[in-house]
Length: 170
Length: 285
Image 1: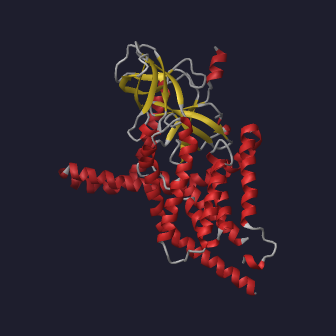
Image 2: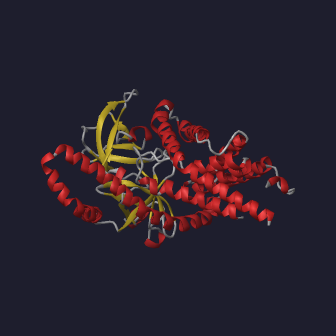
Image 3: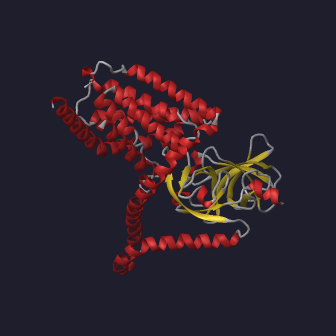
């Protein structure tokens, strides 16, 4: 329960940072996709189930607040979280390189799908342009933010784990 | 731990269930748009004040960052002003946010006298769409201030966009630079009609597109584009921007070109929402 509440809180903070705070720190109008970071981190640290749930909540929040249709972002983030969960096995905590690469890959897949669904379907074919001007900058910015946000998330996870083990024993 | 828990459901089944939930939600939002609005209201009403709060911090950091770049250029350009600049820097820091607000309000006031016919309400922009693909944003006022879906939004001296959703204390605006936006416009010089389309691709260069201009329209670059009478959503006569780079389309019938919006979309803080809807104005007449 405690874990669940803290995860919700993390999602909410990332959401607020992404939509409100980073408006002021946008580089050439590009904002990092912060919600991918908890989705990826919990997927890797805790496995498929939690990655999926964190992703689902993140996406649902976006849908409710910004979407005209409820569901697509929830679906997208959920699958990303689930897929990240498969990397739970090869992951160990001190490594920062893998999470960064993972977030980059996630962001690429995420934007590619958004592009195909929302742009390609409307006959906007210049994928190389959108790659260079939207996807790539967002990937780099998000990866840079991972560098800052990942360590605290690992610490929170470790703290939660200790608390849970403590209560299991007691 | 999971292996303690014999009742735990395997992740793939949860995935399946949630996928179905999502698909149902998507289907529902297509089929019965109204049923899901209470859900949106709850998130809108709770999240908006939080975004507003975090904006205070964001604005502060943004101000500081802007100021650093400002000062750097000034120093490079005007060596002789440097001493003076240092002197005023401390004062400047305090006054900068006040001055910004004053500017915004003055601009709003000027705008107010230029379009006196419509009843308007001023609102602040509090957040932007989370993805980098679209240009929608959230205002801090909603139905309680009289804003409703379809209201036109202006800033500075031009059109910003249209309200697509209004809750009690927030409203969502789709800007005219959004890739999905399509505004019916006309030239102030010879009243020939055309369409102004938002385009993510050109937005980096500060342009949106204008299309379907008649080949024989008597227009030249730099002409002002305003919203047209025939639009069913936008009130007539609001400035959209100024046209440039006119080229003849390959069909040899129409022209298209770039439009520089009259509004600086990078720094929108305060906007004016016109409370009257286009339909209402027509009915009154």
